[in-house]
Amino acid sequence: MNFEGLLFGPVPSRRLGFSLGVNNIPRKICSYSCVYCQIGRTINFSIKRQEFYSTDDILDALTRKIEEVRTGGGRIDYVTFVPDGEPTLDVNLGKHIEAIKSTGMKVAVISNASLIDNEDVASDLMDADWVSLKVDAIDDVKWKIIDRPHGSLNHSIILDGIRKFSEKYHGILATETMLVDGIQDLGEIHIIAEYLSSLRKLDLAYISVPTRPPAEEYVKPPSDELINAAFQVFNNHLGNTKVSLLTGYEGSEFFTGESLEDEILNILAVHPMREDALLEVIERSGESAEFVDHMVKYGKISKVPYMGKFFYILPPKIERIKPNS
Ligand code: SF4
Image (tube, rainbow, N blue to C red):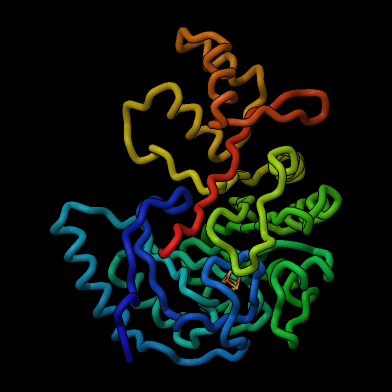
């Protein structure tokens, strides 16, 4: 077994601070083949949990890594299962989580939720400190178009499984909804928001857009108008849940002493701002509205209308494949 690439990072993450990634699934075994997947099309479709790495191997690699990071003066806020496939396909996931937690580290798992109705999977995830579950669509046809699930999966069972999990889970529960141009429209976004509002507990709802080269070339982020509208709809439905955008901008969140431009970009990276609120920030800093116009003119931010008001939003930062890379 090759253990190279089993751990990666720590990398700064807007969601998890400094996150040390665990790649507990060999490339690329997954129950979905999402059109936007940055790892490409699924080579090995599976819904069967299997053993890939032993907990001892993971713990061994982790102990060495923690030592190395600490010696270098670095920081790890979360050990995150975010592999090149679906992490819950690992039958030892629960054991790994338990062992990592016994070292005093916090554990996060980013899952596509496809196996959440399986009692063993739900029970494994119960012990994680932070769990993110994918909810890209409620409509069955849209789910099949965007996530391209394994033929044996049933969407209503998954949606029910997420609901049941939210009733029992005591850690931080997040959902992630990837918006793809031409797949989810505003009607579907309303239905997703309604579904999320029916969960008993939901701490964070992320709206993301494709920012890395996707599995299918036709995949593009939706318009800035739709991204902003989705944020407003989620916010209106999800009173006690923090709604955030993931537009690919990591910014200068981890540094202090920001410039006004950095401050604006950092705020807009996670949520759009109404025109009057942004102008207030500008005025407080002794600048004029021209400062904002200048940022719009140079494409750093976009101004979009929604329900008779204007909002500013950060356009998705799309990574392009460099020739010969
Ligand atoms: S669930 Fe994740 S790893 Fe699997 S295809 Fe979708 S984006 Fe890729």
